Image 1 (cartoon, rainbow, N blue to C red):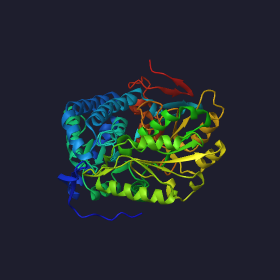
Image 2 (cartoon, rainbow, N blue to C red; image 1 turned 135 degrees about the vertical axis):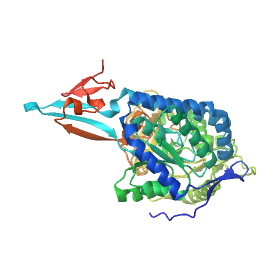
Image 3 (cartoon, one colour; image 1 turned 90 degrees about the horizontal axis):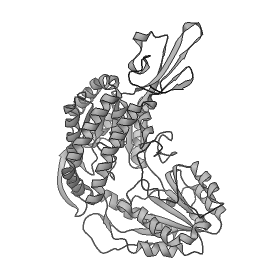
Image 4 (spheres, rainbow, N blue to C red; image 1 turned 180 degrees about the vertical axis):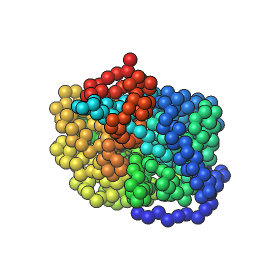
Length: 501
């Protein structure tokens, strides 16, 4: 896919709750982008050589500064996203906590994979991971803090020792530049290398990042169309793009769980309408045993959901078009939430019943529709439901709801683990925790790199690459490999795992 260059101008800012324009941010000029990249390239050796403890100090300073500006940032985010203050305050706090987590994971050091082998004849071989260099980040529209200017991709790259240049998202440009200024100032005041972080604005600016020989990796969160366009463009230079794109996340309710119909129906609707359905982990399809009233219970729960603003006019238009396509493909009559006219980019929730045999490869039903809509399919026997799951596109996450001593649960979980990045058992997939064991990724087309995660300690591994040194003397070894272990890293010495003293 080829993306055309856009005209120079600005990213306009809109209030989704009213649809009114509230300002705009000028696009970065080619000269400004070049200056930012030059500074980032100059910062790369210093950031790479800095100890993880030093990086932890810098990241913590940025996290503190963001928290100190919480009221201002939440107000800006509310005005540009239509999301409520409670949601935004929580997301901002989690953003700061996640940044500290990534810095602490870098200090722990296992992501560096340090090892040494003493070979016969006096030779030696050492291996470790080094930062790849400058990283370009394209943040998400739906998480202005969590996957934005100082979100998971940015914080994990900085913690791993890589300068970061972020392309501001056009859904919230004023927030992007203000948050970027706060983070950049905090890093500077904490004596981080000049140029280790910056923000550029505009479609053309994003393309210049991807095309620049300075940029060595790209992280993206967004649509499949946008993600794959970046993958194909960066492939010209052999640069990896870690694109988290999302598909239809399925939910399977086994027959043994049917007795919890009411709670499952309400939980499903709460999950797929959370944040107006604008989560990449939103459950988009639920498979339920026939004859237990799930379709009616879900419809009743949907009927009470108030319309909510979507992030942009384009997203709202795509949602309504997508719903029409899903209804046509399913030939079902959707249950609809409260539809009283509201200003701005508001949309009503829908639950669309669909026959199991319509879930076939190539159907529109197997493609994501961003917003508060989900499909409901009944099955007569569990094997037909499992077969339907096999026909879906791989996805980021899935849920399985089981009963006590459920003999079917293990088979269902096993079938899903081969097709998703995370399986939630008796819980909804919407929430993502920043932990050591988190996996937020999945097979293509959910992501471009199925081995990667954009959340959790594994996120740092995207931004390093392995190098070996053979027969280097002690004084020629970099800090992570020196015998005295100044960074206090876990290492593997002659095949044996060794923890720091």
